[in-house]
Length: 190
Length: 190
DNA sequence: ATGGTCATGTAAATTGTTACATGATTAG
DNA sequence: CTAATCATGTAACAATTTACATGACCAT
Image (cartoon, rainbow over all chains, first blue to last red; front, side, top):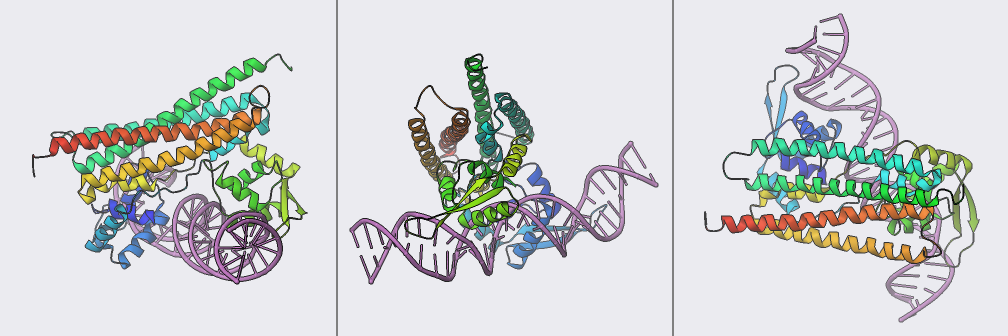
């Protein structure tokens, strides 16, 4: 149950459901994501289970904020999860599936355009990571490098950027391959 | 609805549900995966919708095989899906989430071991892709390089390998970072 | 005869997405 | 006054996983 464990991790500093969604849209976007409709029930379950405690705090504009934070029980569960070795879920890539079958369109130009667009999307995504990165470095420039927490967070960011760069390099390589092939074939069977 | 479209793509050559699961465990493992319990109902839905046709064929051992193949309607739908630009789903990485929060364990040695195990898992995974790759090259060595179909399939394989290599490189880099840090810190606050 | 592979599926549970409902506050 | 943001949530749907049910045939 990864989502709940991620919430445990995030709630080592107290936050509301709304805050957590913001985290999923920003700081941990490269790792996981969840909607409010999934977050609220999860917080409720976890509180009933004793993993979280809830306090109320007033807010300017809108209903009162419900702040959750991790309990000793919750910490124990979080550590158990951290200690159980890397969890490798199944990865799914719709865009790769599309490319895999794209011979069906019988038009190399379409494959080229597809990969070009894919590259653009990946570049945009990398730019977002870079923004998180910059923000991260800016806010942690207080005295002699990273804390333990910061280092671990930074490492995951770098993983995201590594992977994206590799994918973009693959796009370039693939575009070349396709172009070379088109040239070779042109004129042979027109 | 990516699963159904992937089934359409695969069923350009007729296959049974059982065959399709084998494909998800082998040739397209790096792209998508699905269990029989998801495949069978999908095939049924798609047949009722007119995207697939079904024929019966006897089999040695076991019940008769039900072979599905794509219809003209199905092809139209497949092309529509291929033509709608790269679909970028949300990616989720439980193991990155674990690393992100691993400062909680307060033990750098555990982070090192974690990344080491992660690297091993990635290496095993890359080995599997290499096996597919070899098998692929072997079976397509009939006259002058790749067909269109083969080229597209080959490209997706290379994407998988690129991404995995990048992640392994990241593991190495991270292990170094963590080791350097441990050295620096050792003795300062023992 | 026992266990593995071939081959079909259904049922229940979990996880994730999309749509809807409500209401206050603030910026344009 | 209108739209966006803050803030709570529920309901319905879709996708995925895990467990269960059945039976033939083949190799040890």
